[in-house]
Length: 300
Image (cartoon, rainbow, N blue to C red):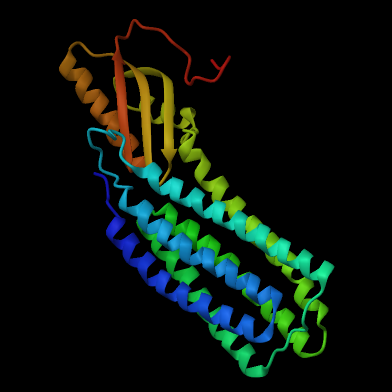
């Protein structure tokens, strides 16, 4: 049975969108008041947070796990595409931050002015970011949503960015103006790393990378009484979200009904181990011989 988590995903995305808009506005206002490049860059980073939430809402709407005539394998990849969109937004934010820092170094600019009340406002921003990151990650893991987990990863980077910015502004408050520009560069690196992490986690789904080692599937299938061997095993998807398994199964069965019962037991054991999973089995007679477990070139 396929679990449709979209209603809960949309609820979380709407809540975090409102919180991210609040955070973005507060950072932008304080950044404008103080003239802080690193804080304005952080506000730009928060713009991507809100954009990611909107992107996630759109992706979630079209990512139904239920198959239909046009999408017989379901719609999960829409959500993975949404997560890749988050990676793209992070790349844009990284570029903008670096560009602004280099321009400030070359052209100079007005000194940053920061006060203690403004630093307290940034601590409120930090608290909201921490809540959003842990809330999204917790719900994302519970319902198996890649878009929530990806967005939580992005927000986690925002926490470190905000901590860095606050540290730099404390330095500015103490008289070290250069700290605002210097800290803009690690902010950009943190943003880039978050984008790379999201990209790395979601590409396997889109390129149909192997989800489960064929040897693991082979061991489970051949443990079922009546199974002589299995070969040409393929799997794709993401373990814990949705996996598709295909295999050729050699069975020792006198009739079709017995062969059917054997394949059902194989499906049951694989489902118990790798759920949610959809399995396609091609049954072959015991006289058929093949030792090719997977499709790896030269693998016997």
